[in-house]
Image 1 (spheres, rainbow, N blue to C red):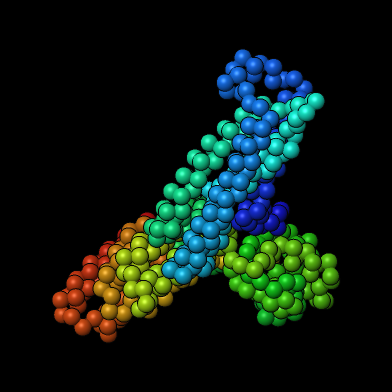
Image 2: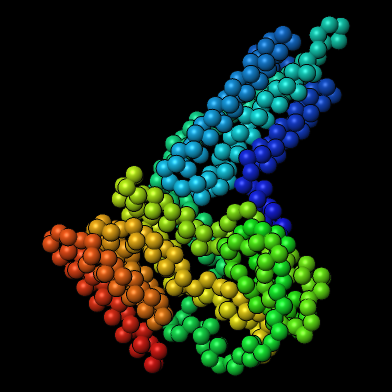
Length: 450
């Protein structure tokens, strides 16, 4: 099931799948309308001869014109799409091209023009003159209606392209996809206090894992781990009465025949076990955000780094990236992350590699902070982000991670800001954020005692 979902996601990301379905639908509509005309179902059309009355030559001319126009417009649409892709890849990052290819508006636009073209060709082929003339009046009129629909689609597509290549739209789209992934992966709200996973580990005694014989399960493909069926891995561990230790987490790159996971067994795993374990992983040529919120964060970070590069020097876009990263991390701060050790009853079965708030926080801020030397606006924005996230977090460990980020920003400011005025500004902001962190830490400590 996991692999089917991934294949469906890959199909949605292509330029041909949805247009192909639209073209197939246009063929069905053309055949149905032509058959209706041929069966005499269009007799009521004679009541409106000015609308539906058209001769064979006139119908041919109109359909030929429409078919040629649709091909020309489709070529323009392809050119605009490729130009937008090239612009986005050069100005922002090539990692977000997949988001543009997944755009339903672009796919529907291409499919609409291709479908009208195919529809006109089919109807045009059925028009006959001579002793037994035949003009499918209903089908010809419907082609006229489709032409007006194509004009509306073209206007909307131009508006869509103009708005979608703006930095705010791109960043918001990636953030929305990442937030959807977070809601699906971490649906459980977090209660104040220590992590549940930490409490579970403290309450259970792990078996002596070093004394076990670990047999590596090789990967059958090279690529990025796009998703993992954790339930299937747990069922496999239960049926084999073993422990599965994941060697790579979601988003990591694996090499064919290298260790994908390891099993604690008394004998090497058989081929059936190897195939079953590989079947729980979905491996592809690129990362996706469905089960990998770190990839969504990575895309926004890449856009911020590109904006902060000397060749671009677009601080406003970088600030916007930090703002949306703040929204993502604030969403993560109040979610319960899954435990790394998973049990069946009281028996350890899976040692998983799972995302953590601390890791995602470092993914979001470390590289941006490294490129923000001397940039007061970015440092102030990051401090504001930490202040906002701290007000929403319910975990002392998360507060400690945020405090480390504040310390590193302070060190960066000390060695990169030369202006006295700017240094005073950042010191005041640092003091405010530190006071907020101390206040939040005291509040969480009080909640733990009660």
